[in-house]
Length: 340
Image (cartoon, rainbow, N blue to C red; front, side):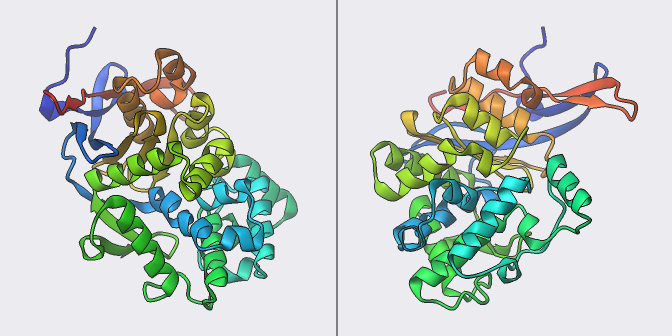
């Protein structure tokens, strides 16, 4: 039985055999919908870019500003707008279907092509003798949603990804509203897919998620659509074998989960009116799943049975080139309660 970690050592640890070879420091804020800090890890005021974890808020105007109704966007397609999909055939087909509804095609997407995350998606391309296209980009659903918003508002969709385009101004406004921040308090950068990315404190990101969850629980129309779409179609938010999909499936909609790049992960827990925003300091992808699942378990928001079902995510194995297990990754930290 290992002892409790020292504060300076609280991290996700990578063990080769029984020796800790690497540590990834983690920061997190757990906030209730009234803005109270309930628990934390590291620095809950740390400012970071929210990256793809902003997608639920970027999708809200698709509903509020009339694009969903005008173009007959389904809940499954709305989930895709909120997602970072794996490029499985169902994802690619759904993005193309959404683009067709708004009278556009793959060429209209501003995101660049990359190989599908999914082995099934990569194999489908290989069998077709085709190269990855823009529609295979994991953010292509979000981009399609942004162009749907532009069409619904009567804006030229060309250049929708640029900071000066009204689409991006609208999305900044929406994010600031949920995070309870003035526009000028949010840092702006460019995301990997080419659109504007928002930088704000973990505490504010967690508040936005907590408020989104509460609004959905109370039945407010637009949040109910977004949260309902993501939890009803978790396979469209990520894909087979990925944590967002597996966590939402396992919890049956009790937990809304969304990954962001560079070690960001965010969760809304509507029933408890809590939001969690987490950042792995060095941006390591391998530390994300063990960290967020440990946080949720310590908050008692997932059970031991849930953790067991998600074991490959919670305790990933290290394997060598011949497939032997030679180590594992584990979270070794304790949340600090705000009451402590």
